[in-house]
Image (tube, rainbow, N blue to C red):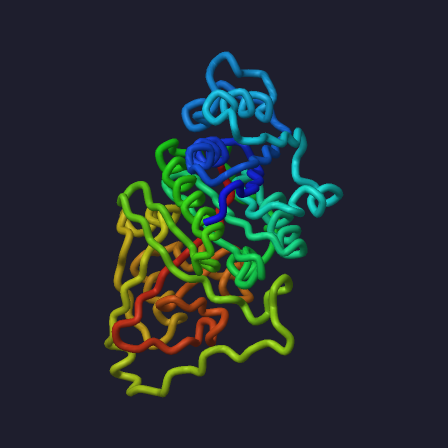
Amino acid sequence: MRDGARVLVVGLGGLGCPSLLALAHAGVVGTLGLCDDDEVDATNLHRQILYGEGDVGTHKVDAAARALTAIAPRIELRPFRTRLLPANAPELVRGWDVVLEGADNFATKFLAADACAAAGVPVVHASSVRWVGTALAVGARGRPCYRCLFEDVPEGDAPNCAEAGVMGPVVGLTAAAQVDLALALLGGSAVAGTLVTVDGKSGTLRRRTVPPRTDCPLCREDPPKAGRPPEGPLDELERRAMETIVRIPTPLRTLTGGADEVKAAGATVGEVIEDLERKHPGIRDRLLDDKGVRRFVNIYVGEEDVRFLEGLKTQLKAGDQISIVPAIAGG
């Protein structure tokens, strides 16, 4: 791992604060960029651990710089008292060894993804809302990328930390996962495409590799590569008799009686979702719309997104497991 690494942190909130603290103690960072346009709020101190009561009302960049100077005086600090915007994003992300994005809104997340892809800069995205956190590593080549997982900014309202609530310890664990991925990228480890999911209620940490979307508007290759061929047909009665384990994310567990895993029968992903609906009414509308899988829901069979297979018609085989991963924004 190279010494004197240059790391830009976008968003100095619940994710940015513990990330900066860990980076300051990592021993390999020479320059830290601090990007935020907000002030310290007393209601956020439980998770924004770089700040104290004396910092309330001051600019986050200034308060963070004071704290980091006391902790690691040899690290060069570059303050950017601004939000990441289309007009400044290309210049802000250029020249860094890695960017850590922990913004609390989707617009900034997608802008960071696009700007880093254009500049060829690795980025680690992180989000945490309620009991769930995610961290996604994107390499310098930018494939797979954030848009492979979450496609585009939602047209309607999406939950953020102010509206949905945030658990401070979950945010801290998510930030630790984000820094771990960032240091791995700096060290040359092959972690690009790694998605880490933190489940605060069950106390579990899961890692999976996100496949690139062949039709991703940001990182797709031309011509698109064909997806995995469908499995061969099995006897229909055997298919229908199979029960598949479905992993349920925290936001949907109110529909499953709190269960994080349930069983549903079906020969295809669509049939499993219909069986889920019969057993847990209301869950189908949270997963599907009239076009198929909702834009901000990702459904995996094993490690593969059904969008790259046959969608809801994807055939299931014995031992397959389905994971539901919603998009979130928060920090």
